[in-house]
Amino acid sequence: MIEKLSAIGGRALEEIEKTSSFESLDQIRVSLLGKKGSLNEVLKGLSGINPEERPVIGAAANEWKRKIEAALEVRKSSLEKVHLEQQLQKEKLDISAPARLAHRGSLHLVTQTVRRMMQIFGRLGFDVTLGPEAETDYLNFEAVNIPADHPARDMQDTFFLGPGVVLRTHTSGVQMRSMLAQKWPVRVLCPGAVYRCDHDATHSPMFHQVEGLWVDKNVRMSDLKGVLQFWARELFGSDTQIRLRPSYFPFVEPGAEVDVSCFRCRVKASDDCKICKGTGWLEVLGAGMVHPRLFEMAGYSGDTEGLSGFAFGIGVERIAMLLHEVPDLRLLFQGDVRFLSQF
Ligand code: DAH
Image 1 (cartoon, protein in one colour):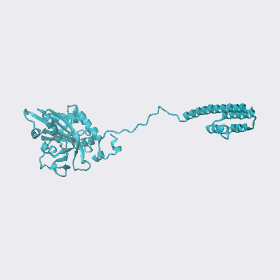
Image 2 (cartoon, protein in one colour; image 1 turned 180 degrees about the vertical axis):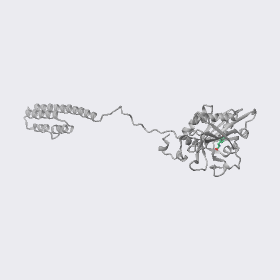
Image 3 (cartoon, helix red, strand yellow; image 1 turned 180 degrees about the horizontal axis):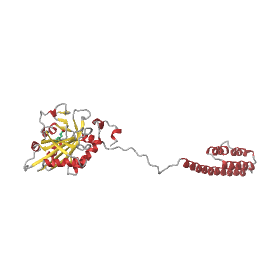
């Protein structure tokens, strides 16, 4: 019996040593130590053996069982090591390979353009102030000297929200808000969305303006020109010229439309310039000297001798479209990432 055990055990140890897969190692374990395993089969035969020999054989059987279990364990861990080695070889990681960049969003072209303007005017001392997009009829029109019968109030242009409230049609109402909030000197920039019932390649029912207002003693039209000249050169290039053409806006007197020299053909007015269409100039904003009515409306009183100011209103989309040669305004608001991510 002892010899039989030794033969089984010895063969088992050899087999375990030779095994090269987890599956066959497991098969060996079952065939030896399982319920119907050969070691158990031997032990089942113990009943037919004389009682004195039984403990000796039992002990020998347990000893073999222990040896086999230990050998299985050793073989298993060495197979695991080999397996891990193979896996590491196969799944080589090149940690020096450049990473795939995560998708990053970008600021909308309109936001970028507004921020650029805030930077430029900020350097001239303008503070930024915001007004509500739902504005009172009074501040949007009346307080900036647009009388009740003015065509700008026409149903075609204005979105009326309710009695006395409109979606602001321009940022000029913020001029009055600023003056009601503080006495002169006032030097503010008011960027924001404005709304008009209009929709085509160059008009959108929602667009953006940047309003500027500078009120102090002895502010002159030449100051307005200097400020706009600085702005134009920062934005369109250092050799940009500006020109003021007389125009009418109810809240300024005198009023002007302001052109900048074409940054593409540089006032050479070449016929085939797509930007200025051969005129050499680009109309970019409205401006003027603050109408005295506005100071009255703001309740400015007392030492108002020599009090003056200028204001301007810039269409943000127009500037962005010119600078980046965007052919259709609607592209800015369609939310197509392929278009927007170019900027
Ligand atoms: N509010 C005018 C518009 O929406 C733009 C404008 C013109 C603003 C002249 C001004 C200005 O402050 O002085 O068309």
